[in-house]
Image (cartoon, rainbow, N blue to C red):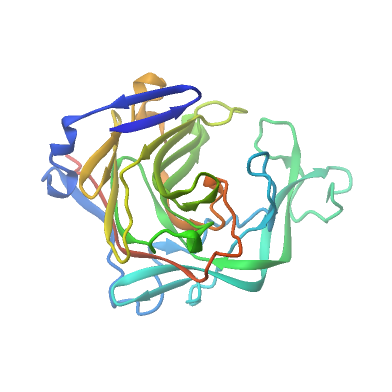
Length: 333
């Protein structure tokens, strides 16, 4: 059973597909990407497969939200240096993503509104790129501004160098047991991409997002899967959130999470069991419309998807541990 969260409307669905043969056992599929985080790379990730962030960095270290998420917080800085082991550490066959509370001077890259005559941003910074319409369609001229600012937290991210379109995406992971001490953390495994030539201005599949502790509603390990897609300019992508109410996280407990994406369906699995089948027919958004995407594994810190932030009970460091990441795709005939 899964629940689709839309304003005032709830849909429930069951499927026998949980008993279907999955791609790892299907001879028609082949393994096209894997990282077992073995001893080949003793302390760092395989740089032929992963980057440490998407390349566009944060847009600042302070963000505000409208109610009920109206707090201000310092974004975690994604350390770029490949040899850094304070935010990403590979050992004993697993990769650990870490969030630390520490002072750090980090660089941010922003696209800010600018004045084409002065080539300065409206905040006065000198542009490091031409002042041009940012997305080619909204009419707002922006330019690149780089700045170095203080951060209060550091965090790790894995961002795949390769893009994928369709396939079975699987991760084996474990996280600390949820409690008030994990308030504000949000481990995730997701895909994201943009391809305006396909009129896919925003494509995203969230295999899972977890709110370790949601203080506002006293929820522990709120486990959701999501599909976001926008095929039009100047429109916000609709959010189709699928919640797994049965997820229970014990200490040192390993889980497998997966998403099976084809032109016809997107199915979400937890520990090899189907828990949700994305009902695209109800939203008229065929899975084949989504474009090729990179994989991202990170910890939203604080966990902005769940309107939470760190407080006096939050304990650092927080560790999100990954045993492997695998991608299967249909064999080419």
